[in-house]
Length: 270
Length: 74
Image (cartoon, rainbow over all chains, first blue to last red; front, side, top):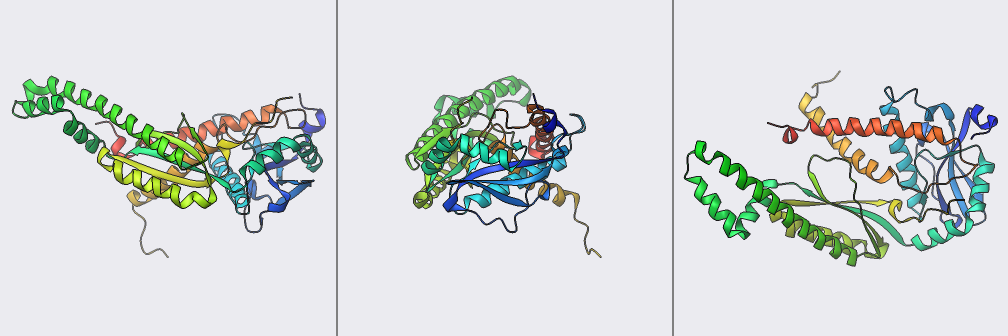
């Protein structure tokens, strides 16, 4: 339960993330959530990047009328502040819309979690997170590949070509379904191999199960923690995979560097 | 004065490119990041309401994705 003082507060402190005191980012020229100016709150070796924001901004009137335009801008602002933090070194990204009462509470939080936050940041030093997705860009190419490697399916395919559309209709539908299923297996095997090759070029890897819907089917969604000095080599592996798996209709997409969203430890629940 | 009004198609394409990066962003941001709990953080209800809004945002991205011609069911 919130104390009455909190419930009535009109301004709150938005907490973006935590960095090491000797890796301070430049905050000039980056717009935060709600365009609120950014500042630092420090406690020993840790520094929090914060902003004073209007509390009502974080309470949409109701679900039906949620202001998605405001929220999109806020999500992008949240990310751009964290990316700025990433320039000089690692950042512990806080969950979007983490708000506390004031700077004093931020300082108390940093002190409370000093040991684990410092350990997490030191572990991340010299590393950055990258995202890799494999998307089915060309389903027809995958179907063609299946016909090349599966003699049984290609024989049926040839046999159907000569038949009249009316009689062949159901057989064609059944065959297409089987080709699609075989294609799923081929793509699954390919991306498992890809995941492992990329894992070998990184220090930590995580298979992400959920993905927001994309126009193209997502066959692989993974996050990798890569040593900064090895980033060119990692990128080269992605380019190789993209080339090698083009005949399967797969396209590889590299994103990053990201704040290490997928490689930060959650603090112990009190 | 504008010389050309951007065609609906070009505008839709630009909008889609923008949305795809938003998809990547939502993939990273949702349910990720350090969660601090305890008395210090504000009432949890505030955060839940933001998440309601986030779900609405995802739904709008999802609807836009389905407008792409290659996704249209024929």
